[in-house]
Image (cartoon, rainbow, N blue to C red; front, side, top):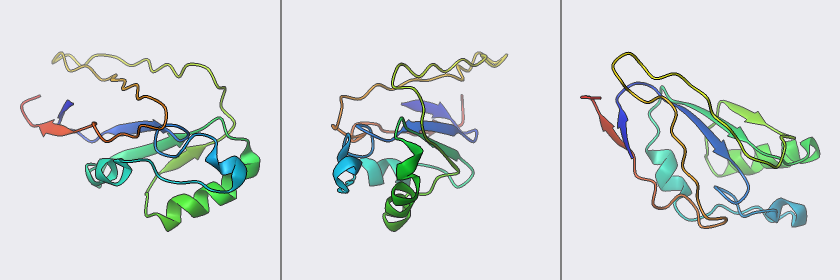
Length: 121
């Protein structure tokens, strides 16, 4: 994925994307392949917003798991609907597309998400 050098906002779902789908129900959350490599690609000025349909009942345990695994985030949203997540944004006057979506196969992990920051964009 070729991106500009500008700071980013990352909107990332939890279950089936970075954590095994519904593993929290048995108390056995686990990171999926490629999660740490993806986090290593985030710039310090990037914002990371995690979102989930998990019931807010699981918020403290989820936060403890993420913190114990060194996954930084700026916001964590619970109790979202289970349907589509739709991002609507404007295109910059330069033509830079500011809305990008990546759909992963459930529980495959983000191992094939490579970020290239291109200052020319």
